[in-house]
Length: 170
Image 1 (tube, one colour):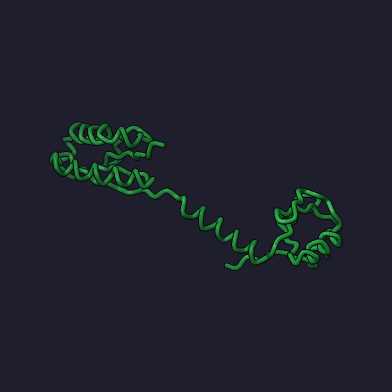
Image 2: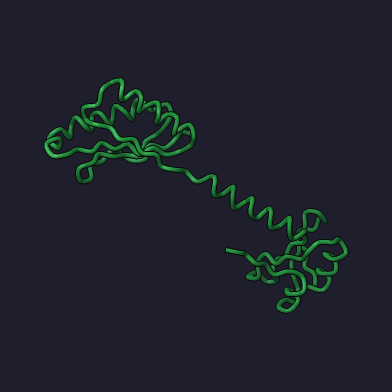
């Protein structure tokens, strides 16, 4: 998907005046005629870039177009990298102490990385009789991680699964 921007003379066709900003030229929100803004941009070997045409007058910046594109890509990449992932840890109602410690260490590392952790206990067939034990194991697991996380919601039973989501403490 290629993003196109309105530049220089193309802005002149649709707008008579523009609100101009530029960090390089120390201009903050001045209203100029489009001709004057284009001349100012050309004198400084930069481009007049339309940012928003919904405002009256439309908002433009004076900057090198390649630098503007680079900054937009950098912002998009930064926003994309800040997305939290949900990691899943599956437990059993009759899990051993050492196994639960390994799962706890994995969950701690996920939480330190800033990811959410979804804890699940699946019950199959006759295991459904041990719902209380499963809930107890899940609550014990959550309390062992209290120093690193907080519970997004109380563990709940849906179908044959007990589950909750842990979010990292800030």
